[in-house]
Image (cartoon, rainbow, N blue to C red; front, side, top):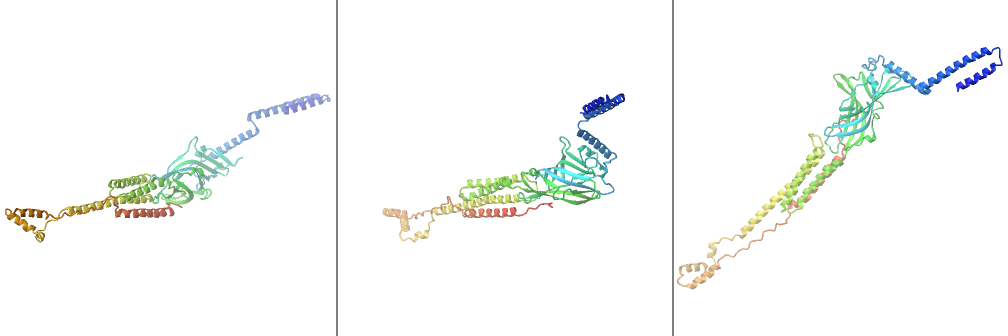
Length: 477
């Protein structure tokens, strides 16, 4: 467009020059010089636009060049071995935590794992700059060239900094020298647990961090948005199989060592155990085993094999349940709430077996007593010679006469023989033994009432005690 306008102007000037003959030659050369100069300038502008692109792209390239010069100037003579404000003031590190994933939690190892975005912010006046932007978005490569806090996790067992596909780090620099440094970390930390109320227990799992080398006289840690809002857990990241994450708190504490006083930042995550799994796997089997052991009270006391099977089987079942319930817990030296329940259930099952042994003992003893009476009743009584002489008939004298005067009279022998037959004592009929088959023991009758009542009372007291009281949380703030 510019060339077209130049050509039109040139044509008009040339046309006008024909009406001025005196100055025609001078005007002609002047116009030619102007036209050539304008054409060269226009062509140069077009060439520069073809090389650099649009004006916005040219401005962007200029900004990149400016920031490159700014960064080179900031790092020129910068010593990353020295903290900001060394010898003048304390360096303040502002921190906050965003938890993206919480769990799993290990009871046996007493530890938990979290995935977090760990943010730190501090001011380094050596990095102040002036430019077209207030904040420079930088990558992680610059972090190795500047001073960064030596933060470490006091109760961390293992920490992983994610490096796929590149190191998951973010660095922002404001024009006043304020830096924001964010890292993605996976941390396995200790979680001290008190298991007296297991499985109705609750815990406060701490996360402690601070400076490794700098005491409070050099570096101080604070929460960015206050203790109430500086620790946030994502809603979709707090799903646990055995626990409810009921909340989190933040705070600070000071610890004293031989090297001085240090500031420690603390975040507590409060966990409440879900009891459903243990009700299905432990409590219900124990409850049903106790009920099964009490079925033997309703069997006849003569059913020795059946009652023996009930007693021995239930005792072995309770032993197996107690062993399996302990496998998911650390080997602590104290009894848990589940241990007390299993112990009482074991006592009821074992008592049922002892009750059967007692009933069987007294049943055998009763049978032996009844058999002895029957044997005594069946034996004939011994003859009393004095009683025989007092009888009114002449049985004894006739017998004597029979033996001495046998040849005198044969008829006497006949009478004596008939009378001797009558001398046999009358046979006493033995009493019928007591019918003991399908009998019920008095001990069984009492056990049918006492055992269920005691077991029901124990369950009422147990569940009312542990479900209504507040669990003891160690280390809660």
